[in-house]
Amino acid sequence: MREGLKEKKRIVIKVGTSTITHNESGGLDYVKLEKLVRTLTNLQNQGKEIVLVSSGSIAVGRKAIGLGKKPTERSQKQACAAIGQSRLMMVYQKLFSEYNQMIAQILMTKFTIVDDSSRHNAQNTFRALLDMGVVPIVNENDTVATDELDVGDNDSLSAVVAALVKADLLILLSDIDGLYTDDPNHDKEAELIPYVESISDEQLEMAKGPFTGHGTGGMITKLTAAGIANDAGADMIIINGGRIDNLTKVLNGAEMGTFFKAHKTKHFHLKNYIDSK
Ligand code: GLU
Image 1 (cartoon, rainbow, N blue to C red):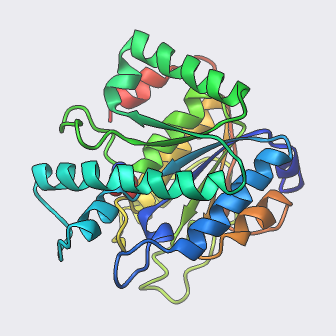
Image 2: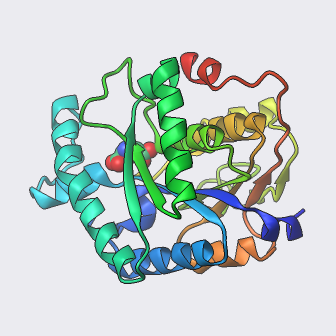
């Protein structure tokens, strides 16, 4: 199964805020970002189609205006996202252009999925961009989203994107090695689960545990993502984004992280998944 990863053609890759920022200061980790961009461009050059789902707008905005604490009020978060998103894209633009790789920004809300014409438009736009050899960079449109309209976390958003573009594979670069039998921060005996055929109730229960860092999701949002991606027909892998070369390794068949197997649901309809969230 791991060997089969070499053949994956259309891949959605999600990086969390904790993967692209320094843990202590919350500032962008340019060294990692450079490696990420080089790796993604290289995959594109191998003939793969890449979509990047990147978090970080709120953290970047917050850092730019010197806000010490993570904003809790919606208007503050939205203001930080508005400031941060363009700065984040500026960095991606600069780094990708060094390799002459075109990128595009796509900002979505839940509405993009539940509204039929919006969803079709988004799907067509993704298709056109991929046909042009462009790497779309996706985030939630945090600045305009409301409680009713936001997907809320980029793990779920990346699975929605994987379903929308009919990806073969979704890779979540996380601050953890994968899914464990228990929370490894608290249980030293916890073991990494390398393969999940279908998510059990026990795993769901365990995933509700605490989470760390600058990110939004915990393990539970990753299991939600696996539910969407797998039903849509995409395999999903969680790997540790601490080292960007894990991305190349896992795509060359290395045994790492947790692999969630696709099991395409016959009447899969993305709208139903997002409506119930
Ligand atoms: N959309 C948020 C941001 O870019 C992050 C959401 C998430 O990390 O799940 O800051």
